[in-house]
Length: 429
Ligand code: FES
Ligand SMILES: [Fe+2]
Image (tube, rainbow, N blue to C red):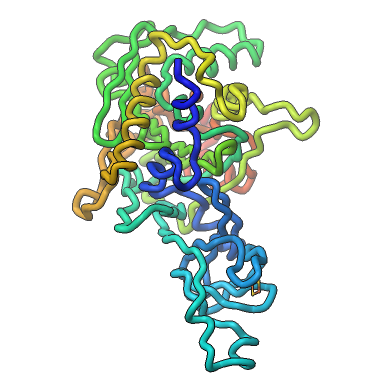
């Protein structure tokens, strides 16, 4: 059980708060690269700050204060130019470093004053990687955007999915180190929701947790498995500070503010050997709804939707003074302790864990990956069905099980990539 004070420390994300300062040491994914092809500006709220993301006509990304430094108009209604973003109110132009490039009337009325050289706007660095746009809100020196191993993989269909979840990011991240929930929130609940009389899902017999350079590994032995299975020998990753990494996908829990979280999913589906080589010109993205329009109830049909129901059910800010933690929560206890320690370290001027600055180290940052061979080398379609055997997650999927509302165009592109349309011998959905 935590004290009120500890609960506050773990959950507040604003500038100047302990956790807010810790989180500002890491790049956060905030949009898809392809999103700015569709519209050149995007309003963003990140770590309690209102910002505008844009790509100008020369291809430079910028992330600025949402409010113009002249008289505070909303710059997400501005338009991009060759260089920078122009405010729609009086036409001032800002560049990605926060410099004012033009003040049209001032330059006519009072050119000698050179007022534009004396005003600046808040600006943060943005970088594109793996189809995502990343933002860094912390102090210099700016670290590297991690090149996680899956970002280097080839022959995969990648898609990016966003959802806005109305609760604090940290209760979502606690779920990244909670193996037992899978059995109940996903396996059993899905069975109940579907009225399925099939076999009972395997129960957890043993769980284990350990810290490593980039977070924590959690391990499990399920009924019918042993300590020689990869769910135990390799495990899955609670990726520091705000991500779950399962091997085939990442789920970042990006703090919008204290009571809202942007879920950013990056999903990799290896195409069968028969479909190689496969490349994507553009990594598609979509937004997934979390509640039913008709009833306002949360959607429960997909894996991550079920997670969202659990998280929002804890309240916008889970009250950890009222919990009763036990053996299944060992990983959560470990992570909370490390978070609070690392926040203190940052407050003392130290460098927290998993900040990557060495380009050689960042060429490809390896993580524990169940079935790495499958993701890297692929299998033929027949092999895949055979080998996925005892390890959940290694399967050539026909549909997208994680989030509801996948647009049909993306589903069709996925099926083409996997060779599903051409191959009528595949079992029906
Ligand atoms: S408020 Fe932006 S130019 Fe005046
Ligand atoms: Fe889950």
